[in-house]
Each structure stands twice: as structure tokens, then as C-alpha cells.
Length: 437
Image 1 (cartoon, rainbow, N blue to C red):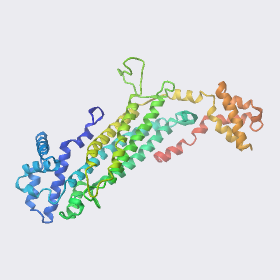
Image 2: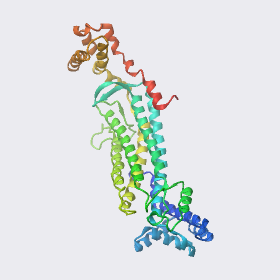
Image 3: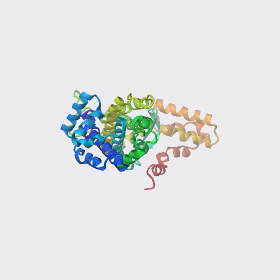
Image 4: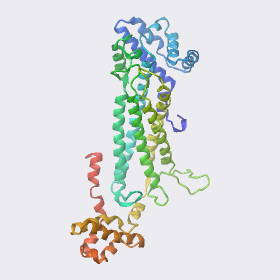
């Protein structure tokens, strides 16, 4: 994480103050559960809350760090500092638990906290895309395949396509949140030999989690692999729309561009430059988020009931992937909210090749008139290639072609060049994407 690509709401989740606070909640709720079933005295559990439930300020964090430098164990350092706050009753803290009970449950809590913010980020992206899609529902633009003119679409359809993609991403992220929201308080090798399963159930309920059905000594990492894979898919969706913006902003197209504010500079050398810096930046950020996916998949394989080969990985990819995606989603939303489009340029582009985009209509009309598909394709392509190379309107060439006129009249040919033909089902598609409203 670096400040340039971070927002404080998300980075705070990964700060030591929040982490230690969550560790405390796990331990304190576990003490309450132990007291309820008579394993530890109820006054001891109350003492943990009374004396340990204090903010993890700079002094407490520094003390934990100092103890860890000696013990070389983060959870022991934490419980030692907590004992200094609680006193004699602290001997009941961590009763029957192992470090992974604290670390894994906390990590899942942090991922849940991050996901709630990411879901809100996606709502902002979706709102921006929906607004701009309806704004340009009927704005005709050229559809392209392989980067080459194909047939007309509308800008609204382009944006609706991205809306649907991010809507699927939100559904996946909601499912990933559900899958990652588990708690493990099962003790060494996950057998509950030294701690009653009730403790896990109690702590899970208090923290808004579910008990992990079987945790060995760690929560199974296939859950985390699915979670980070979902982040990677959302990052790819960000790059998908960013790439579209970068293409539209090319000087040769200039059908749209990122908002260029007063006083903004595009180049240190060339004062005329207006570069797609936001979408290029988003492309790079997407790569960072996706880089977490492979390590998360590799973390699934652990030795026997537990090893810590996953630990160092997660200390990095947990903060980096969530913080970066949070920043990218907000940057994308802001970019789309202010994005500038040029409908007149789009229409000029549509008209620039003399109606070539109607070639499929001609092909289909010929087959309807009784011509074999192969002959219809040959007749249409011959005129289309002439239009392409000589810059003559396709309609005029078709009307002047006696072989083609043997099957279609001039009036029938002219009727094949109606632009509205290509957009007649826009409403249907919009209803599929956005619903009747």
C-alpha cells in the first residue's frame, strides 16, 4: 500500500489499531463463552473487558512490538501486553486456543470489513454507469470488432454492457463475502480437544460470522482463493472499461475523453496533450489486484493440519489487493461521472465509410430474394470492397450493379440504409439490463 493509491477508509482496516482491536474482541468474547460454560470464573471474563478494552494507541502498539522483538511471536506479544492491562485474571485469556484461532478469524473479519466498503464502491460505479447509459441510450456510435467498423450500436448499449458486468461482479463479491465470513476457535489441530465448540459458536455470533465446519488448525484457504479470484475478476472489469476509454480518446477517434480540468497539464514537453491518464492508471492498478490471485490459489495447499507458508503472502495481498481495488473503483466512478462524450464525432464516424456497415442487411436481403448465401456474399462483398478502396457510397454502387439489381430494386436497396434498423431493440436490451423501471 502506498498513499498515492490508498483511501483512509480502507487502509484503516489493516492498521495495527484495528487488527489488535479485533484480536481483543475475539479473545474477550471467547472468555465470555468460557465463563458461560463454567471453564473460567465469570469475574475473570468481566475483568478482561473492564481493564483490557482500551484503544490500541501508539503506546500500546509500541509495547506489543517491543515484546514481539523478544518473543518472536506476535500473538504471544499481544496476550502478554493484554495481561499487563488485565492483571491476574489474564491467565484465563486464550484458554484452549491456538494462534490461528485469533489470526484467521481476524483476517476474515478484516476481509469482511473491506468487502463492505468495496460493495459500496461498486454501487457508486453502477450508479455512474447507469446514469451515463440512459443519458446516451440513443446516441449512435460505431460498433467495432477487431477494432474495425462492424455495425452501429449506441453509446448507451456500450455503457449498459459494462453496467451488467459490474453488476455481476457485485453479485460475486457478495457471495465471496458470505464465503469468507467464517470463524475458527477450535484449538490445536482443530479437534476442540481443549476448548468446547460452544466457544466458537458464541464468538462467531458476536462477530457476525459463521463457525467454520472443519478448520483443522486453520480456516481452509480455498475460501480465500475464491475471494481473491473475485477481486481479480472485478479488476479485469475495470481494465475492460478503461481500455474502451483509452481507445475512444485516441486522437484519430476522439469520440470521448476523460474530463480535463482547468489548469491540468497533459505533458511536460507538449502543451497540446490531453492524455487518458486515469484509464491508463486503472489498467495498471488492475494488474496489481490480479497479481494477488495466483498466490491466493497457491495458499490452498498447506502441510497436514497447518503450516504458515500462507501467512506472509496474506499479510501482503490482503491489504494490497483490497486497498488498491477500493482506490481503483472510486477512481473509475469519478472518471465515468465526469467523462466527456462527443455524439457529433460518433455520428461522423458512423457515416465515414459510406454506408459499409449495412453490408449484412444487403446480404440478408439477397438471400430473402432467393439468392444462395454464397452468391449473395460474393455480390455484396464485391461492392463493399470497391466502396472501401474507392471511397464511393455503397448504396450507389449497389444500385449501379446489374447483377445485384436483378434481385433487388433501387427502392429496396435504399431501404436497407436506415440507421434506425440497427437500434430498434435498444429498449429491449435496456429492460433486460436495468429492469422495467
